[in-house]
Image (cartoon, rainbow, N blue to C red; front, side):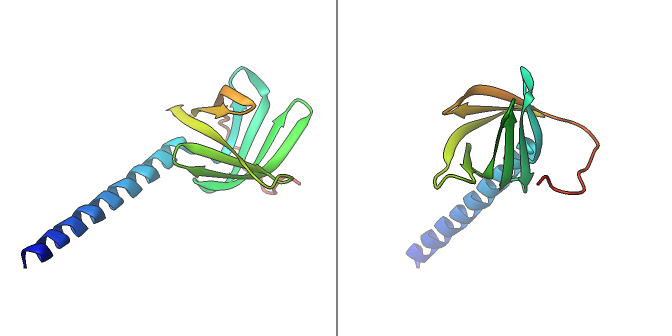
Amino acid sequence: MGSLIVVGAIAIIVFIWVQKTRMARKKWLNQLDLPGTWELADNSSTTFEFIGDLSGGNYIFSSNNMLESGGWQISGNMLLLTPNDAKEGTSFEIRWFKLGEIGIHGPGRERQIYQKRVDNVVQLRPRA
C-alpha cells in the first residue's frame, strides 16, 4: 500500500512538472512572436520573413541580391532552418532580448540582431 502511494505521488509530481514546462514553452514562444518580418538591426535591407505558427512554418530570407526560402522550426532555444534546396537544415541559437528584438547566432549568421518590423499592413496573397 505504501509503494502505491509513492508511485501516485511521483505520477502527480511528473504531471505537474510536464504542465509547467509546457506553459513555460508557450509563454516563451508568445514572447518571441517569431511570425512576421524581421530586419537586421544595422542593415534594413536584410530581412527574415517567418510565416506559420509560433513554433514552425516557412521562411524567406533576403539580403541584397540573395533570396533563400525554406522551412523553420523551433526546438528548445534553437532555430532550425531548412532551405528548400537542402536535405538537412542548419541549427542556430536564438535569443529573445526584448519585445521585437531577437538574436540569431550560428554558421553564417554570427551574432546577428534582428528587429521586428511593425506595421499594420496585412498581405492578402503570399509571395510567389
